[in-house]
Image (cartoon, rainbow over all chains, first blue to last red):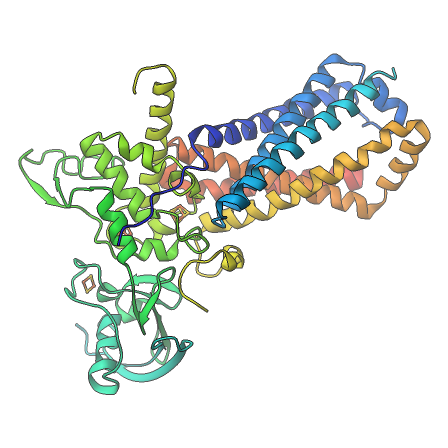
Length: 121
Length: 245
Length: 128
Ligand code: SF4
Ligand code: SF4
Ligand code: FES
């Protein structure tokens, strides 16, 4: 009896992207936390505060990086959980397509939100 | 051997054919320094001749006697009863997890053996360099001509303990990945890295280190999986820059 | 129950009995991963309140100051710390750092997560 050949499905690159995104999240969160304390020591307590906060280019950049890395990491992660369940090829294909579309949509929506708020300053 | 006598209850998983498994209890008088396998064997010899289990060497070499003892994978021929229970206590014996049961305590490991064979891992390795890198200085002085058996005895304990192997039969599993790592270290055969660079290979592992915890033979599969990952990534990067094909 | 592997057995992932710290880490990571992903979606949906201008958002912030919501936020922070620090352990072991002391590394990082969560709780409930 021959054992089946291991399926590729998730290779070193995809894994590395997930891991690098994960590490970036930690870095961005760290920087964000420290900077926030200097920019808005009391927190963002009103709508006006938020709009003012989004006038700072660094904040917008951080938010965008954060958005992209978080969505990437969590959606590749969801796919990994699915892989642990040894899905059939059609199910995996459908899930990959769905996650890719949802991921792009989430980033687009998030970016639109960020720029809408920033544009109200 | 001490002259202590303990009374312990062996609770043995029984299963024949398609019947659902059930547990059967046997009270035994044992010397606590006897091994769990001795107890199982005594049940077969004096209580129930229909009990099916695997064993051969009785000295941790053949890898046949892996079982679940009180919920943990053990090589039963080297597991003293004293180490798993106390006087008056229970010893629950079940077949290894993640393998189909043939009968009672014996499981079908054929797919696992095939996978091991497919890694082409040498059964005999040079003594020098056969230790894990963190075992500083071990075998360093050995004569280069000396060889010994590879550590893995293919007992399957690691596959049984692996939380990933619970849900996917396609996962190559710790022993197989460890064998690929050792084979690659000795032969440099790049095909092994390609083969294990996938969802059923090194990337499915969750760094739980269960395999390393239960391995009775110092293979440290989890360490080897981590090492294999680095080798896979290294090769990918080299290929990206056209340094390997 | 059949003895062979099956996707139906996924609940076994979460069974901590007879398991090593490495598996507890895996269990924690999987639960927090699912929790944080759920929060991500929720967060994106809720933030659409921002586009409704000052009034809509300030009402929402009023709601967010309730202790229950704050507690939920604390859970997210705890999950983030656990998942992030645990993830660090996976990265480190993969790249060959601390593989033989991964148990100790796990306890150390989880202690950090606990301290971090406590600090956030203190600030959120007693200072701010
Ligand atoms: S370290 Fe990896 S291979 Fe070993 S038991 Fe855990 S998940 Fe399985
Ligand atoms: S790696 Fe260890 S536990 Fe796994 S089959 Fe080999 S000897 Fe047994
Ligand atoms: S009987 Fe051979 S290893 Fe236990």
